[in-house]
Image (tube, rainbow, N blue to C red; front, side, top):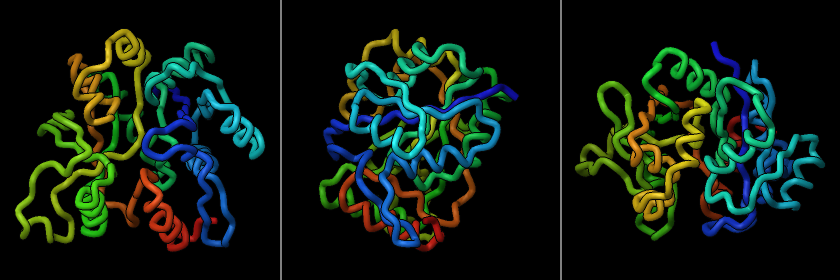
Length: 267
């Protein structure tokens, strides 16, 4: 198996939720920890990794990470998204691993074992340059996503893929369209994209060399640049999780995530 390192890109000036990495989230024991600390703790549970770094251009985030004992790599403030920030971080850190895993800093409920699944798929499928996970929506996750859409909020990301698990398209909309009866199933046929990527070094080089595309800009989804330049994106489909893996995209997500932390007994 190839070696891997984890980079957690984090920026303060998010257009959708400014200051999001430093938003406190209360755990099961009543202790509040910042989103970036919870993301760091999620990454630190992954065994076998050569290192974990938070990549940021903001001193407030860097100071917070240093305070809880994390490692920081300062990156260019011109980085437009997490993938560009990962590429910049690796250019500064050097050859730290065969595979770079991007664990996005707004997904503290992502299961740690998925990192190994992504690296394993890269190892077994030489035709893909990057991999990313998706999980079948539960009825409650689907309702959460549908509520975001109905109320004009930009929420989670969904993905559709081919029969050989290559991404066809990612969207902030619910895709595919579902008739009402199908949408009311216990597990509607909607794949929720989880905020994690594993890249071969060539993928990051190709990405940085390519201009941003219109779909990427319209959807606000960095991974669409890969599809636009014809880079194969392998989708790792996960079995339904025992909890709702909600990302922190909007202030209304905070109580939902705190409830799940409490239900899972995570301090």
